[in-house]
Image (cartoon, rainbow, N blue to C red):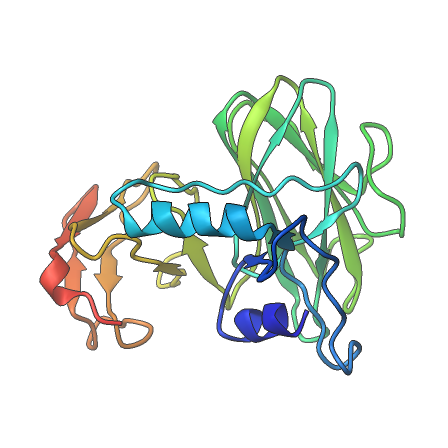
Length: 262
């Protein structure tokens, strides 16, 4: 597990460890100080043969998609600003948890379906939510979101919130927990809905998977008029940025590969 902790410290959102010996994958050992080095991201060990096959695919021009399924009802920990993709069958509920730090007074949990329709349920009384037991819920068609803040009854600092995603139909979705200060990790090709007040900023990051292709970033307002600023050196501002699109209505930037830095 030390390898997983090291990858997490460098920003990884999940880890695959290939066995270095022939045969089936083995159980990974715990770090020397498991309580000081807490692993919060999903990680699995695969066989040496599967690792070699994946490396061959990654070296080719093929796109590689990895889906980690949680075992049974075991909840997956959500990290602030990092979306998790999953799939739920009709009438099934998948569970996640999110720990709220002591200094945070508001956060949002959202579920964005790629296909199908799912509903969102949240609790923080120590029990996982159900369709009849919950503190907060959203059952809209399409994207669901709940914003939980200090004035809400039941809000608490330093608590673990339990999240349930229910399949109204079979659905592939992305679930995201984010605080006001988090920079949300965007997933290529997956739209995300956000609300901004006047003169408020929301920050996002994107990982460039193929440095030989241009990156297109689009902001489409449902109401109001947001502007788009991009930087590779830190959080952009109106005065300090590398690219900007400030037209009325939708804004789009196309960043050519020559500008990517690693």
